[in-house]
Image (cartoon, rainbow, N blue to C red; front, side):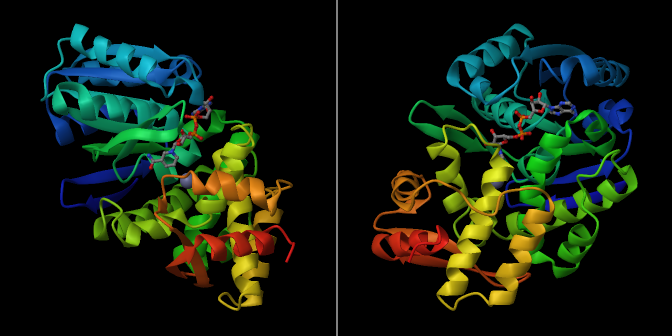
Length: 360
Ligand SMILES: NC(=O)c1ccc[n+]([C@@H]2O[C@H](COP(=O)([O-])OP(=O)(O)OC[C@H]3O[C@@H](n4cnc5c(N)ncnc54)[C@H](O)[C@@H]3O)[C@@H](O)[C@H]2O)c1
Ligand SMILES: [Zn+2]
């Protein structure tokens, strides 16, 4: 098992990365969070696979344990489900000292995390991510959210978890498609912070089946360290944390303009390639770096571009919450492992999108 310590101003906690850790979740939560009652929130795909083992472990650790199951999928990340989950916490007689365990992918992590952040103005959350995306990204860093009709993640809060238990053994039951989708974020992390990791994941793809737990442990742990380094320096995204949005300005625009029919990591992969090619055309990114990024993304079977017209992407990007007045911050790749956040005026950004879409 590898332990990574995250130390933000609001809380310090461990991320335990290993294989077949679920039977130890109870003692890890006990040690990190204390409390008397635990509500496990999970979805109806993950519950039949892992909920019994996690609940039994929590009971062995002395917790009164409850389990709430939501319907799987992004459509559950709304205030109706949030309210049902919070009613469940109240019925379990949870107090502020007690713990929500988010067992699942990023949807469960964001929703259960937001329930924990808002119930009684904040109780504790332990994140037990079961998808690769949740392990490398959403379970670490304390962002929680639900979606509105008006857009994704528009209501939320920062709540750092008390502990994160990432059991890569759970990835054995993830579909190849979802494993591949998550690799969009893995490639993003490597491009923004670690040339060696990019060499590693480019030479032997991490979405191969059957999954190799030893290798995934290393890759997940390195991704967590990369995110940790950024989050430790800037918990609430005033500065450096914005670098994690690499590929996301265009990625989010593709995601929303395609009606969320494509996976998040897939859109980020395309956004990463498109922005990097465009900034290469502007002379901000070396051409060889842009080529390397696109080759790596393509080798995973992820898209390096989008068919959506630049004006559609522009409109979608302008309504994103990451827009700052008349400017949009774009994360520019200077080299593998070196990025810069650069404000683009809306006109400049429109031209960037023309380049990104291959029309300029
Ligand atoms: N908070 C953050 O910092 C942050 C960062 C990135 C993404 N997110 C959010 O994360 C969400 C996407 O996360 P996701 O890709 O994990 O989606 P998800 O939670 O919908 O999980 C994808 C699918 O995989 C299933 N699943 C999960 N683990 C499994 C396993 N081990 N075996 C079999 N099936 C399994 C789920 O039931 C679901 O059907 C989005 O809502 C996004 O906004 C949040
Ligand atoms: Zn993302």
